[in-house]
Image 1 (cartoon, rainbow, N blue to C red):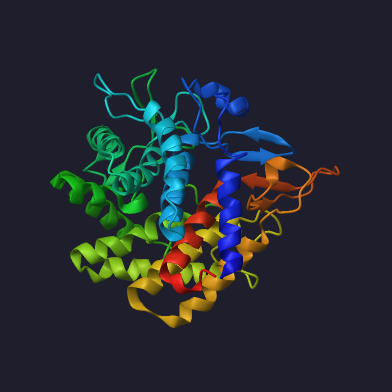
Image 2: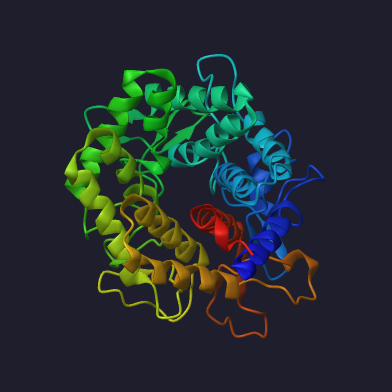
Length: 390
């Protein structure tokens, strides 16, 4: 387990070092479009052919905050909470605090003026965990205010789903573009957590209505190929989809006792068990028959599989999952870059190997998510087995 702890520390140093903005400059050409007032604390999301770029810095940074808080607990080192606060403050600076859009977080993903509902929600669990760890209510309040905006504006009771893309400039949700698809977002079970914190029954109702839609639309078991970023036409499944919507089903089961939710969670665990390759890797595009392309790995998918396995083990103590936890975590450890000529790579978890482009450029694509979700997974492992920390 010493190797896991060492890999975790190296990944944390990469995330808080080269991957964190400290010069207040936008990250890459896409980042320049977002026009954030301040970039300090944001996580640089993409590094390819020695160029940094952005992809939805708000939710990526929110998951980094979550990773820091989990690592602080697992390592018994509260200094990581300082880094969590530094990055969380980037998110808070993107939140509107007055007017009719008070609470909205400008979570742009891949296009200027297109705020993504799922990207808002995926930034919130880190804020809640940070508030709990530090006692600072501003992070909790920011998360709850964001939930309120989403509940009042994006949620549609008649659909059991959320609208996806909002334009501040046009003051409306956008439709007819690929990224805009009504979806039953259950990400991190944040609305259930919001209900527990506030007693706001609407939050609870939204969480369970989303889960009902997901139960109805589950296909294949443990996944939802009918919703982006999966692709029903081509028949492939996104590597983190079962994590975002399958894992939270466990919390809804624990809240309600509804066996249907537990069944979906178990299906998600089983999907990951089958999707892992023999070396613990997982691909960005995994087809319904579990075949894959030759390139386009997703170390973040392996890490999310490990997270689901850890929660499954904690819930039921099924020892048969332990070898799969080890398999996924070992793969992520082997993907860490430790002997590099480029300091921007030191300690990063390699996310994927791209297809050759006909040149001698290295096909390595670094995404912050490989390191972020590995940190979360490794932290869970060290918490579940504290005697193995070395």
